[in-house]
Length: 333
Image 1 (tube, rainbow, N blue to C red):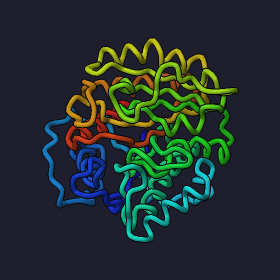
Image 2: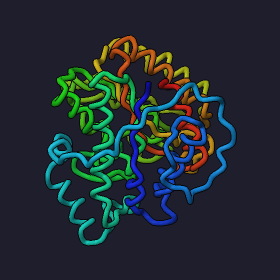
Image 3: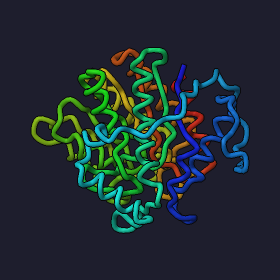
Image 4: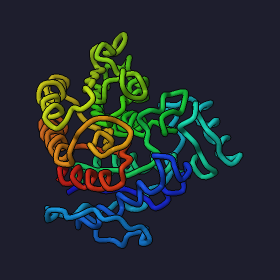
């Protein structure tokens, strides 16, 4: 069984009609999981229409969690200083603005929606730790893996997955946590949160930083101090496809997880390495997302009692995003 958490309120973070990280991303995910037969509840966005093509017969249903609630700010403060939280709140209270150097706009409701995104990921963590289901996926926006402790960037306001790590450690007494990030862009925010912390293993596969935002994530970035060796960056050449990524999983990702033996596995699930995505130059198919997910499930079965929490990061071609999320969910079943 796989838990699924999302909310129609995620469309209330408004970034402008031409922005890649736009409300239709959540509409596309909601439509795709229903078109694939994974979810039976009514689509909260009946006006949204997109042809996803055919899906193979679903192996089962995902179990929808109740409407998530905004995260208590005490959890956000485990990663972000109060000054950062208040800055995001202020920009939204005055009607919106741009939080970084041009690509992270916010609207009046964005602060509350960002807290809701954190809350959905934490809801998944609590549900998995309760033991009814081993795995969960949070379809949220805004994404989180670029948000550094003291600044928003790259469409991200709060570091959803990094906050979830600290929540698991503080509330559920989890010791070592691994985060695997297969978004096409380096998870610089997650790395910044944990680069000196040996209790968190962070593995990021992403397009070579010489060719892709945010320009970090070189292989020589391996952590600092006590955290040296617990940051693993795997830059992928532009044009890399399924074979190259699956080889990286077999030769780098899985051996690292086996050596570290985490007690919990989190996934920053970005789907912008898809060959149809407009923001990068990686050539993954939807099948690769399912195969990578299945490999992570095998690792979780070996080390974390099967427990995985996955959170949506990037993915900006709506059809590819919806189809890839479906394959990711199937891979977790």
